[in-house]
Image (tube, rainbow, N blue to C red):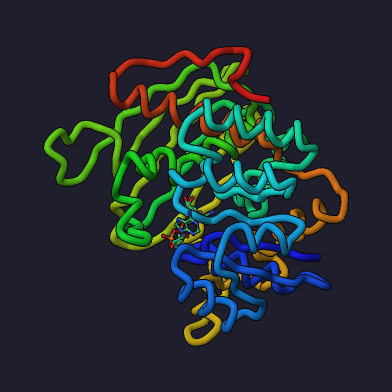
Amino acid sequence: MRIGIWGTGGIARAHTRHFARLDGAELVMYDLDPARAEAMAATVGGRAVATAEELLAAVDGVVIAVPTDAHYACARQALEAGKHVLLEKPITRSLEQADELIALAQAKGVHLVPAHVSRFFPEFVAARDRVNKGAVGTPAAIRVYRGGKAPQGTEGWFQNLARSGGVILDLAVHDFDWLLWTFGPVERIYCRSVRMGAEARDVPGDYALATITFQNGAVAHLESCWMDPLGFNIAFEVAGSEGLISFDARAVAGLRITGAVQASGTNRDASDDPFYGQAKMFGAVLQGAAPTVSAQEGRAALALALAAEESANTHRVIVMDPATASV
Ligand SMILES: NC(=O)c1ccc[n+]([C@@H]2O[C@H](COP(=O)([O-])OP(=O)(O)OC[C@H]3O[C@@H](n4cnc5c(N)ncnc54)[C@H](O)[C@@H]3O)[C@@H](O)[C@H]2O)c1
């Protein structure tokens, strides 16, 4: 299995470590900064190449982990070359770009798979399964929180809203995806957001609070934050007619290890790591299986994030187009 890693920055470390564990995986890496690709190849195993063309010639599929504003151009080149693509979230910076890539993947007969890694977190999967099995009866009210310190990225690209989309497109998109996957299509969304230190502070940026009404009548309260001094946390709660499901990563007495293992960025057993689950799924796609997350679902999460951004900018409720509110 020949896997390309396109972009060898922060999140590529998680992908590469887990792709390297797949049976028969052969990793090839490319980055605009050759020293980064070489350093990653030396650490994890595999080889670095000097151009995107060399990368595409050497692999069956690629993981694209470049800054968000570069997703479209890199994915387009990979799809044109007939390669399956695992594309970091959000799928693209605009819906037009997403539509073009979806059509191109179809025309080329390859899979475009958005890397919505929440689909592989045991807690998010278990909560969705229980909701679907009626464990809380009819879901009525949902709360989701995701937050941490503001990321910077190479040359600070996360802080450039035109490049990253800020906390709404970059961070909340994980929860928009999980909410759509678990509770179905959205009817309307209202969002307020604030940018730290900006002249016009009341604009999308570092903190966002959204109220989402689903077509099934449930309401979700979503909070996403790049200003949390305590570091990264995720939490959710689903209240329904028969009960409540809740999860708070900080409250769970997990196994905490300081030292070499901690450097991997997780305190989970490696077999439970969401990035391993995602790597196994994409590895199966390279061997002919259908992906478990579709490009249309990536588009739906982006559409909801863009609606939240529009609401934050206009202070209006945004009513979703029922035809494209989910897939
Ligand atoms: N799933 C998650 O939990 C998660 C977490 C962090 C980031 N991300 C996403 O992953 C993507 C990358 O984020 P990051 O934190 O790794 O950023 P980063 O800045 O740490 O790394 C990006 C890398 O891409 C390289 N690069 C830039 N343009 C390139 C190009 N055209 N061709 C080749 N290499 C190029 C840069 O040199 C850098 O090494 C973003 O879309 C981000 O939203 C996802």
